[in-house]
Length: 149
Length: 273
Image (cartoon, rainbow over all chains, first blue to last red; front, side, top):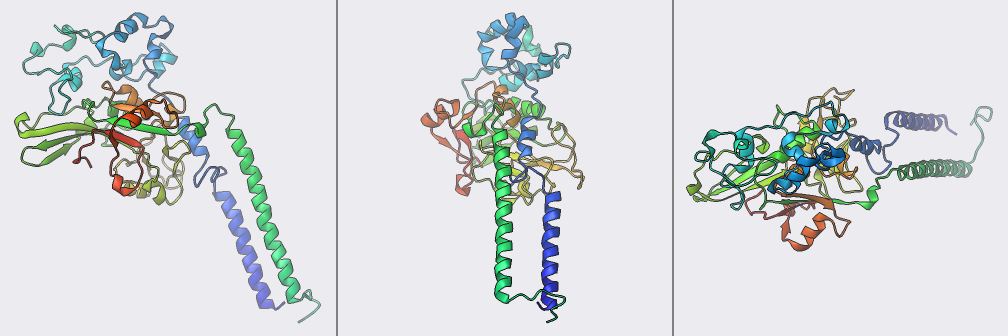
């Protein structure tokens, strides 16, 4: 074989080996396991911490059973516990960790119940100017079992 | 040619040996790779969640949305999105079509703090809320443009981000026609600043992948007091989503782009972009 061809082949071989070595070092192990991405990333995404436990876990184990059964039959049954009381997964797994106290302000109830033009008309709404004399809503209404006075 | 230094080999023989070496190397790597991949796949099936059994879908009923913003609030708390920045995985837009043929669209703080009646009712022809989130397209433009494979469509139909692999180039944020992606510079429990580049990563709604793979509902669906958000399995004919898709008249956002979104809308107005 002519020496210049031999040299070219040697260089090509070295280049291919270097490419394979660098690629095996740089590309993560699970890359290409399912597609053009790192397969382990799916597991990472699955393992993020859960913050919202769900209303069912409040009524379990006799913890808040009475309140739960009242809420269950009320018009507020579509509003889950944690929508007002905040994420409570940590509290469910350890009762000593208390969730944030529920926001009892008038404006918080107003997020749903102050009259808005864009809101569906059949949804229960009040005019904050004329209704309730700036009292806290819970002064008259039980948030766990709302009624009309 | 000097016979002492080189093997005397004919051109035909050289080609024959060369071909054998190349074919052998290619076949060898292919066989080894297929063995490794099969063992990985069989290992994965041992987990209780099988992503081949599900294909997730989302329905937004705009006729039920009351614009309370509890979805956007719950989303930030569940996914540790910073509250002090204008970053939203989901948000509520308010559309107001005025009598003088003008459309006002706003979403103050994603709707988390509520909306103000700054236009008198007499001037408004119609008004409604439209919750927005990542559409988890079947043809996602964001995945196409990622240069490193850090975002992808899973087998169960969710577009996810690899927070450890994202280089923060922001191309996907530009590529998303729905504005569903944002740039996250802060460190959160979901990601640490990139070890090499030090910067932030792209982030967006994952339909709470960490929840739905455990059999829970996404945080926004659970938080919605009006039942405007419905989540379910498109592969299950009795799922909440399929019941609506079979019955209601639905639409998707920007269908002309061919992205094939899996977030379906009931009561979508022509003004909604």
